[in-house]
Length: 311
Image (cartoon, rainbow, N blue to C red; front, side):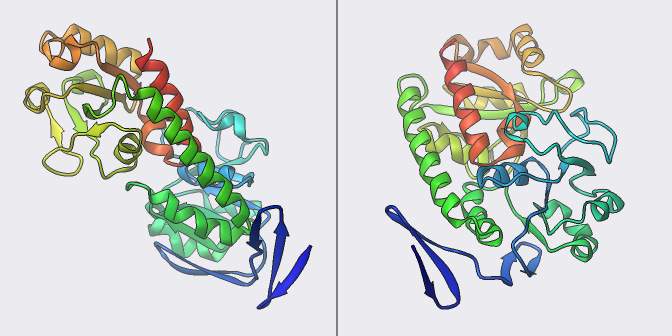
């Protein structure tokens, strides 16, 4: 059944009512205000965070810009078939447009996009991007930021009904995972750090409770410890001073969870920490836990965390 209301089409179905987006639609975002003249059909995702949000709304991108040179990708302009963690959800074989900070403008033009979606990391090239297609840049690093971004993106894409479903599924997953982790990590003081390994293997950057990672873990019932400032860098002595009940170590850069575990276990100082003695140090991938930052990443983080604590 369809009903006209104030220039928009209202779809009435089952128990829910979702208003279709009336175009042109004007969307505010971190780089300004953008008017989208028609429903976008060809969308480019700049970075894994943007990709997560688009896929969660059921939108397949025609182009994709990766987050890091550490992740192997084919040449710019080639079709991408292997996108880390989110690849199984991508069916469109998007074209590699290059770095999410500074994508290849010629390739973008050739894709003839209706919309470009990225993060404010790309604000330096926002004017150039906007000349190619309407562009939306969002913040995504802070706690629960994607919940603010997704309804705006859903409106831009005429996917507001999908947003409601995404949020419901997220909340249900958080509650289920919280129950699964309660006996092992619930209410414990948990330190989340990342390390690049190699020469920096004894240097750790703290992921605090106000970023995306800490926010999700707090939602899951963990008590995430903050440093004395945002992204505080500490050595092993700093870890000892914080004296956490559990530690989550994220392998960043060229590091891997396996190497991070080996480095940790080879150091007599880290093995003396209370978390080590309690066998509550967990080694996971920075890319999943800090770069993707969306509802799909949350689901994957929850699964990996439950798997790790049950080993």
